[in-house]
Length: 279
Image 1: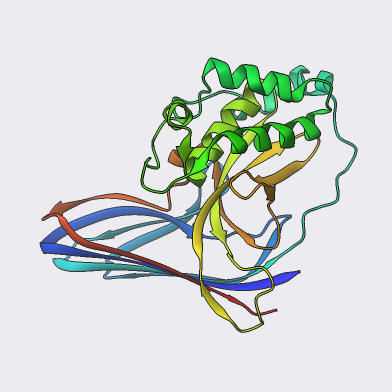
Image 2 (image 1 turned 135 degrees about the vertical axis):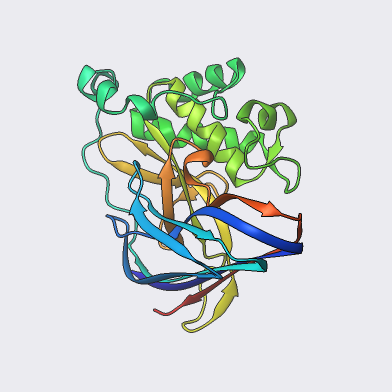
């Protein structure tokens, strides 16, 4: 078990005065089978109203507004999380189980594609070939690894809303693209899958007390008898270096920050993530 402290600070500096701002933040981790949240706070400055709730997918959301003139908005998320090793696999379900009405009805939303995750025909064919002869859990990993081998990690080529088909055509992308593409491929063979946003501690073997520059990250979870996290970008199971913030069908369901404001354009956007391994 690994204990991580995460401080994520987002600062908007505007070119002039902003008179009003209305926002949603998904920046607070929640406890589940893979992690235990020991403490978590979300500070917004300035802020005139806020409301905290859980969304449809179980993610923690803070809705907030600023109704006073301001030229800077700072959102600071601080958390301490114990991250558990990946769970040992239970008896995996078979393809017949995944195709049963009990599963397809319960997982319908995580079997259906969105415009962002829809896989092109050649990816569907590759996924079917990779899954041939394998049980669903093994097939899911094989599909993710195959697709990752076809994409080069290149920042700045795509955006968070870029459809998977465009990243595939370019054969380049970042973690969001690899997650979206994996979701479309997994769903195309009938494996329920969901998008995960969170943080990645970038160092293996970090010393206790060492603070490093962390990363906002994206990976996937598939269901084949139990939910299993996998990081296609790093070709590895999601585990003690991953902190979950939110889950959904795709990025649109888990965007860390979204909102609207009245005023001048953003002059500076500064985002910093610092992660300290406490134990």
